[in-house]
Image 1 (cartoon, each protein chain N blue to C red):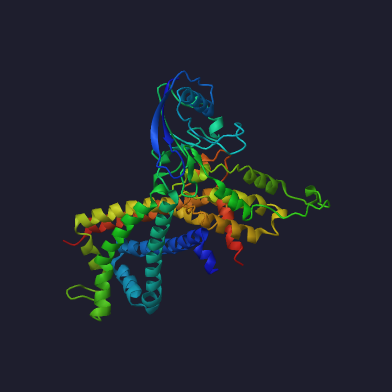
Image 2 (cartoon, rainbow over the protein chains, first blue to last red):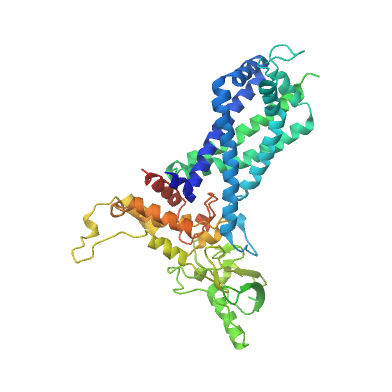
Length: 227
Length: 246
């Protein structure tokens, strides 16, 4: 089996499996974020649970970090290997004649997403790790904030229009990445042609609805924050 | 038609090649692309220049020899055809046409537009066959019932002529459409089952060894394939390789 993952097809399968995992994670992240639009209180409760539950913190979180890092590193490795396989470049190449822009530029949409993840970590993950693991404060409360601090922190982050703009750009690229990545992952896993149309439709819906939802949530908090 | 041709010229596999401009005049729109190349070569020979080397054999879309990357596409802008089946009516008077060899590290240029595609042969040797005892007692293939659907699908996969357009087109120079078709044509038939696991393992291993890239499912190969080989064959190869692990 270890030989399988060293083969070109095995690497494709590994890429697809990590993609499935990340798409499931993205969906649950979206659902939790969506709660913040309807109720700050419920969002706080769920955030506190996610931030303090040992299974999520010590099992799911490391698995997620591994999944993200693996997907990026494997993406880069495959890109480098594929570049090497090309040899001399064509003087004239009409890629648009036979394939979509998104399918040919997954590395670039991926790089924008990577830049976004760095920003996202600086915004949320590093302060969270600092509060919990360095300061040792697992209370979820903050001086001057009524109830748990999470909803307040979320609103604060979306005050700056530059950050909201960065979020929008990143999620547009995420949508582009998913528009090819969703069906591509199924194809790599050997999904049959009979299911192709259904998969393409589900893929399109997922790739547009989820990133658009994240954008709407960011805009909602930007226009509704407490002044 | 009067045309300007930008053609890759390379003396041999070690030489550094370059694009060279040529003019051809009075080209009939009914000519095939290769006939237009013949006209150019006659001109070059008459003027004492080295003719442009290019692969061709049957000139009826069966052998898979003719290659050429024409105006940024394998076998040119037409669909479902090889270069020998491409006609000059696909172009306009006064056009500039860029003609390059199929590019891939695993398809090194031998001369001008001729590339070495023996890597495909080595992949075939690794498992693209069934072992049959031909001692004189070979049973009739029709003794084994095969569903019409499976027979048709196997035949569709078997129409791959191994021209290499899939590799030339792929941004990753992946050979997975070719190998997928060759794996599928046996995987779909009962005769192919006995050696199925070894076949897919060995052919994929040889494909990787030859230095072909990794498929990222852009689907460009399927569009440019002169025989319309479906991406489904790549998915089937992936399934076959996963199955072969157990």
